[in-house]
Length: 200
Image (cartoon, rainbow, N blue to C red; front, side, top):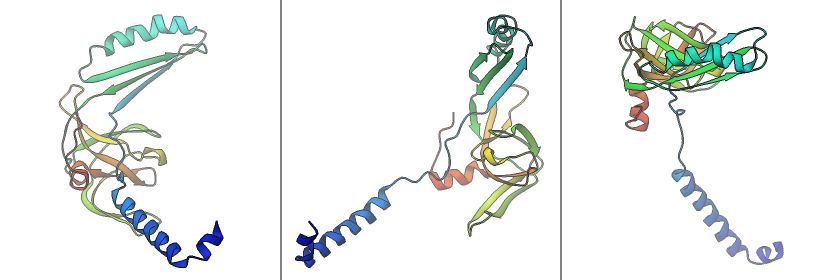
């Protein structure tokens, strides 16, 4: 096979150029996901009932909680898992009812994979933030002094509407400084990059 191309260098050169051009065209057409999927805020309830079987937990603990949860507005769905070692976990997902913004002093919430549900008041808006270890600068980001961990990137940041369970999406968390300050991209920035989003 190699002998064929060695004896026909012009043909080999043309094929190499065609492959390069096809690669450049394909690179332009590949979709690039700059931001993760917007996941709904999730609440996790865990409890332990020492010595109880999974059936007892489901009947005496999970059933009354699930009955109360079924009446919560904008709770899209929930699921429960009880185990034979006496532990019960109930996970509930809220519906996002809209998009909004967060001004300085406004309380926002986030539910991270690592640190769970934390809240804090917005300390700064429209701050240019350098991404550690790179030459990348994220423009016009929002800072919140609240708990954050390495696995929280991609978590929704939202604010509660009134006293009910309605929430308004204000952005997506992507980084932090230490464990007590997180940075999120406001929803307006994300829509500027990706176009209008449907979140509810």
